[in-house]
Length: 335
Ligand code: PBG
Image (cartoon, rainbow, N blue to C red; front, side, top):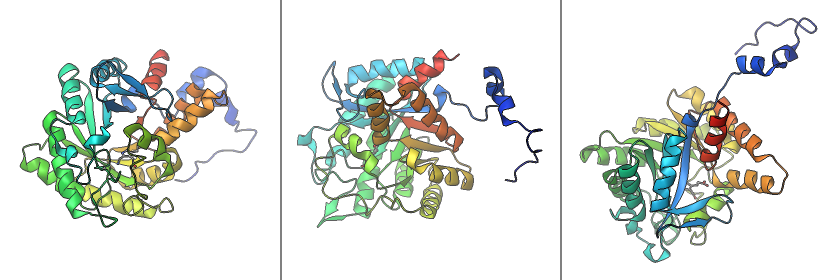
């Protein structure tokens, strides 16, 4: 983009259009609304239970009944979709991760409950084995190696039970090669042509996922790291290849993750591909903002809105954020 002609100071005074709130509003380039937000939520067994996640102050693991109440609130606030993450009973975690395709597993029960009580909210489910794998990895592990093709078969079974339960959007977050194509055909062959795929296309091996792993209880279980399948934070052009492959394989929407430290990736992906692109403001980003605010070092409302707007400015069509409810409340009060 060329810089448009502008006469020098004093003919040009950039502060002129900043002088009044209405004028700032008039020249504002990007906007944020509740409609841009996807709310990731942790689900747990039990009833009437909301257990705090220590490393994410203000975030709770919700039992299904509480989840349904919160889904109603989310709809009232104009939030279009929720992403559900199960806290799996450690006794159900096995090396073959078979709880992942149990049609009665926690996440499937949660999807059914929300869809029957609040059908107007979109439901997104992660596809990856880490909540169910005793090794904490997103794939099957054999002799210390993360198996690719064997894992993909498991992911297809996992995706199927989730859409059968009523999940609208399947979100593979595992970073195995070829999983989008395999899941797309498994869905189509079973009559789920309308279930969409939001692929975590460019997902980096990041330290910012730490609090999430506490929240779903996979952190303690994790042996080693995820660097043989998640991307190297030093790489940018590789993200373009990852996204291109997932789109060729049939992804309807793509995601970049983490969010704030990867706005450059978001912007270049959005410029390369004209497809719905989402950013995930991950658990560690939430924890940083929240912890600083809890110490009185940052104004939480201000930094949350500023960080969410940064995603829009970089080109995101939507943002997954643990602050979704809070941000939507703030946005609705502005009207
Ligand atoms: C699981 C998954 C992770 C996140 C979303 N899905 C963790 C990981 O890959 O280790 C992270 C989300 C967050 O940190 O908020 N595959």
